[in-house]
Length: 193
Ligand SMILES: Cc1cc2nc3c(=O)[nH]c(=O)nc-3n(C[C@H](O)[C@H](O)[C@H](O)COP(=O)(O)O)c2cc1C
Image (cartoon, rainbow, N blue to C red; front, side, top):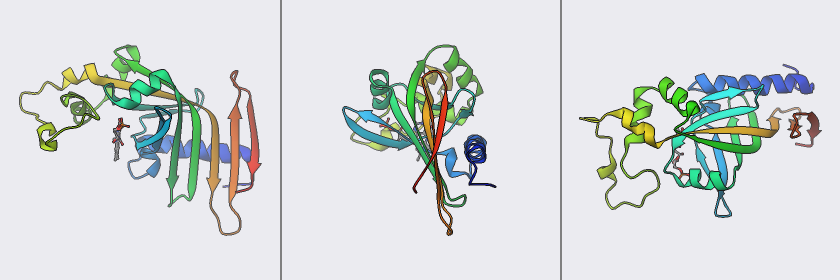
């Protein structure tokens, strides 16, 4: 792998992200997603469901009732971060997130979701509510129609306009940034790590 060549660096970054979708052992399977909550940065881990380099897209699933969704609808600015110590690679992405709810995008994503994932969306009252007794919110599978959870299911489509790649190595780290303009023109440059 030639980390001194920007084209090779981009290919490596895209391989890592694509692998993160299907490889549960990759730490890029569960990157950190950040956005603003009332002017304060908030971060959380989410499962990476799809990566498309052509669209510069990462897809995530979440509960439509969560605070982050409300905030993303107001302010789509968001960032995704991953680091895998086995690969010694960090990837930082910045861009905007579009929220989908009860449309063709959510329908297709719901249909490909596993039963175990679907049941999270049937939890009563939704994410982030303050509760007295957490066990009142345990999954109750008996008599539950997981399909009802679809009403609470949201798809987050994160489109990045910058990608920064950092590779750690003893002889000298490699840090490279890619940026895309609104009409997709790419610029790339090396940064001092
Ligand atoms: C391994 C792991 C995977 C997770 N995957 C998701 C996910 O795909 N979608 C999601 O909304 N939350 C996921 N969570 C939970 C979030 O980290 C977070 O606790 C939850 O979404 C509530 O965050 P919020 O208050 O910012 O909405 C995951 C947490 C962990 C530890």
